[in-house]
Each structure stands twice: as C-alpha cells, then as structure tokens.
Image 1 (cartoon, rainbow, N blue to C red):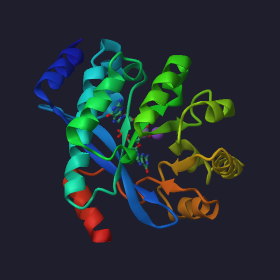
Image 2 (tube, protein in one colour):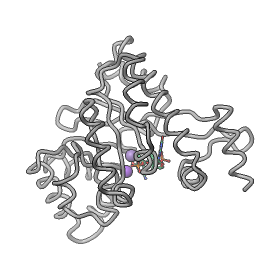
Image 3 (cartoon, helix red, strand yellow):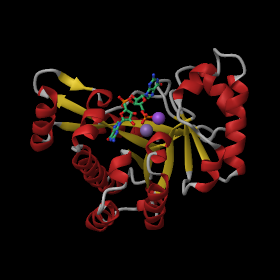
Image 4 (cartoon, rainbow, N blue to C red):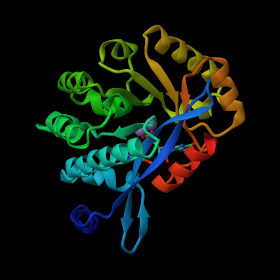
Length: 254
Ligand code: G
Ligand code: G
Ligand code: MN
Ligand code: NA
C-alpha cells in the first residue's frame, strides 16, 4: 500500500526517466536503434527498477498513465534526434498488455505522431508473448491497427511463455526478440545452440527479423553472427544509457 501511494505521487510528480539501450545491426556493426527502458527516480530510495514497480502499476491500473508518458517522451526524443542528425535511430518502446487493449490507445499514438511530426517507420512497439496470450484476439486487432500507422511490432521475450510457432505466423508482427535466457543457455546448456540457430532460420523463413537480447560475450556474438542473426543488444555493446550518453556514443561511431 505504501509503495502504491508513492507510485501514485511519482506519476503525478513526474519522477520517471528513460534510459536507452543501443541495438546493433550485427552484420554492419552499426547502432541502428535503441530500446527505451523506464527508471523511477525515487526521492529517497534512488533508482527503482521497473521489475519492482511495473507489476504494481499493472495491479493498480496506473500502468496506462505511465505507458502514455513513455509514448510522449519517446515521441519528443525522436523529434529531437531527427533535428540533431540522429534521425536514423529507431526507438523501441515496451507496452504492457493492459495498455495495449485500452480504449483510445491507437488514437493517442496517432495524435502524438501528428503533434511531433515524426517518422513512425522508425518507431517500434514491443509486447511480450505472455501479455498477448491474455487477450489474443483483441490484442491482434490493435497491433494490426498500430502497424497500419506504419509502426513496427516486436514480440518481446520470445521463448519464455507458451510460445507456439503458430503465433509467429499468425500475429501481426515484424520482429522477434529472442529472450536473453537463450543467449545465456546457448553456451551453457546442451543443444540450446541448435534451438537458437533454428529459431533464427524460422524467423527468416517467415520474413521476420530477429534481435538477440542479453549478448554479454564475444563468443555469443560470434555464434549469432555465424547464423545470420540480424540485430543484437546487450552489455557487450552497452548498458542502458542516458540520452546524453547515447548521443555521445552514436557520434563516436560515425
Ligand atoms: O531495464 P530493465 O531490465 O530493468 O527492465 C525490466 C523490465 O521492465 C523489462 O521486462 C522491460 O520490458 C520492462 N520495462 C522497461 N521499461 C518499460 C516501460 O517503459 N514500460 C513497460 N510497460 N515496461 C517496461
Ligand atoms: O524484458 P525486456 O527485454 O524488455 O528487458 C530488457 C532488460 O534487459 C532491461 O532491463 C535491460 O537492463 C536488461 N539487459 C539488457 N542487456 C542485458 C545483458 O546483456 N544482460 C542482462 N543480464 N540483462 C540485460
Ligand atoms: Mn523489451
Ligand atoms: Na525481452
């Protein structure tokens, strides 16, 4: 109850910030995008992880306000980067399953794109399999509407839920994000390397793109590149960074 009250205040007082983690095109060895990751700057406790407050925000219904704040902040950031020579960066946003099916979400996104005048082909929305399964039909309809605006859809944490390959074929998605557990297990658990190789092949056969999450070692990177994984993200490249640090990093790479 205490934390719920504090979260309510955080929403009212704007105590959140976004960090951005680079996403690399593995073949071109170039940063092509970032994933926006929220942090709560608690006045006393310091940074609170979303793992602690997103579930609470979902239970108390505050998540939609938070997700709308993220959408607006990212739209503003996209606009700023378009004006600063970083317009090529694609920004990926995590949306909770409950926000996805809220009345007015699609209109909210359309309004932001119009207000900021941004290139929506370089916006991406990530939803987890688990979130989609809760409300599969309704979610698919909304995702299709978002996609028609021109925004890409990524299936996040792929492989952690009751993933069925049927969903990969039938859901309106463009990108699969392979959960970091696979990337870890690939080098540590028997035959997981073969699963990863097959999932990469399958996503390509279905004309989808694939991002490997949680890359931490050169060895993992080499294996993923050998099997033509499109994109990668992880501490090997960079931790999530402030907007200023992302700007520095991207300028150094040019
Ligand atoms: O950045 P970190 O690993 O701490 O994120 C932990 C979890 O919180 C991830 O599963 C991520 O999807 C989720 N998360 C991060 N940022 C956001 C956000 O802006 N909105 C929602 N709904 N979830 C987020
Ligand atoms: O669930 P989702 O994929 O949205 O969450 C992304 C989370 O993964 C972020 O909280 C981010 O901090 C974390 N993360 C990013 N790269 C790595 C990594 O290389 N290793 C680990 N352990 N976590 C990572
Ligand atoms: Mn994500
Ligand atoms: Na993920």
